[in-house]
Amino acid sequence: MIFIEATSLIIINCLALLGNGFVFILAYRNRRRLTLTDVLIVALSSTDLLVAVTVMPLSHGVIIKGVWFYNQSLCRFQGFCIISFATASLNTLSVIAINRFYCVVKPNQYRTVFSTRNTIRFLIIVWIVTFSFSIPPLISGADNYTFQPGKVLCLYPFEINTAYTVSLDVAFIGVATVVISFCYWRVYRRLRRRNCVMSEKAYRHSRKSVPTFSNVREANITKTAIVVEFGFALCWLPVLVIDAIDTATGSLTLPRQLYLFYTFMIFLSSAINPFIYALVSKRFKEELRKVINQVRPKSNLNETSPRLSET
Image 1 (tube, rainbow, N blue to C red):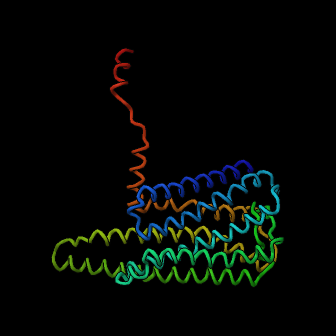
Image 2: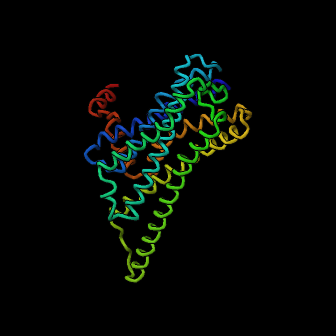
Image 3: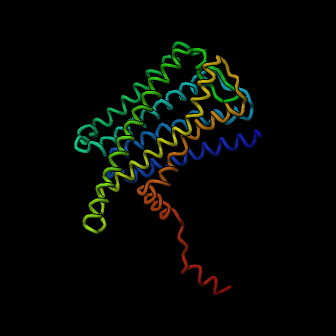
């Protein structure tokens, strides 16, 4: 079981590193053609990449040893990084949802609200708000960070500070969930209405209505963003449920397998996004195909043919 658990964790870590690293490679290759939505996606990948670099490696040896054999400073560091990068990811997803809302529902205001300067400001605000919640526990309760063997993580024990846990859940998870749900609900209604109008025009004129390239592209980007949001929610829902149970009981009373599942879902949320892009996004597929074709070694038939004939 230790071998299976450790191997699974290493595989998730490698997938997170390779996948999010590949997002950066594609962004660099197409840096002159990046849209503002692309910039937000790269910002989201940066938080996932930070989790893969700072948080996951510390748990590799711990899952084998079963004890925290690093010093207390690294324990605080891991706990701080988990809170920071998780909240930053959720806040970035909220900004992406707002971006899609203005692009699809209020296109006339999109360029004003999501200018290059404003987009950078939004990302700065995301990290300022994130650190405003992750730094106070590090300053006031640095000694409270403890290693939780079942989770193979060093975490701030949310069950000892109900007020902080509730405020974190409401301010970040609650508000972000409402914003994301509202934005994509309005986006869905607008896209559905647009499709109905196009179908009606096609019926009246007895011919197929061909959507514009921009509409198709924005619809695909929006679909990709929605799937990413769904994947994030699917990974973090068990985490929130387990944290709520621990906070209500005031102690860690659940089986080890559930706590280990808790950690794997956190790590998985940092690894799945690039694979969602590869499955859903047509642009990502095209760029991925280009890179693979460039990297794939080409066999030289002119050199091999004489050897085959000689043998």
